[in-house]
Image: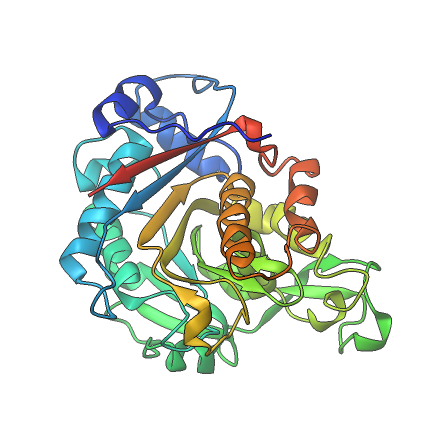
Length: 354
């Protein structure tokens, strides 16, 4: 049995639950920023449920591509509700400082049709700049540079503008920081054996990370949302985790729990303007995509993934496809690793319309 989702006005939400969504999965320095922002010393207020924000604009995808101004409005409203602040600068300063170097981890594997959209990233960049983050201290990244290019993100390693590059071939991997696991198919191990090295983007280039996945199914892991996007984009030697009986579990959860990654991730924003219920993560089947027309915000990646899993699974059932709940075991595993909340009864979905 699932609790009925809460439907609140933005005013009521801010009045009763401002900052209630801020919690699991946020980096240590993010907590300090929040404490400064709300003028407290010590612990933040405790809340008994994890909160996920969904901001919707009906019709934003009717022409096939979103209007940048509407995306910006959705981004602002989501951040206002998330932080309880009333201006773009104040909202983003709650989580980021002018001294930060911020990595924006996108999902570009689906080309222009099913990747994090440039319009969403531009809205994030404007928010970070409003908070005082220097433009050249914003790095849009993923594992492979060619995926960034095919998704519409021109590479830039220069000293001006937003930087954009991949771990391969540009940043490389950090041999001193790795995830080691024997829960894999050893026949598919690459040069590093039972170790998967972390990207130097994570360990050396950035002080904070915003995770910006897409809402889509995954033929092996069930879905690829916050956890899968972050984990398998941050390390190498990942093929070994895919075959049965693993299906990317527990690796997707355990990589996200690793301190070098967990301590830097401060925010998750799911690009669900368009979504995919079958054929992911790189589906070109337009008939399995739909216009969800929402952005999801939160600091608990497990709760967000639980909501996303439910939405994708419902779409699959409507199209007479098998459930992916059994495949997507990594999300429940992440709760066991204390990364967030999986129990749907302990998650509140706040839905806003702009």
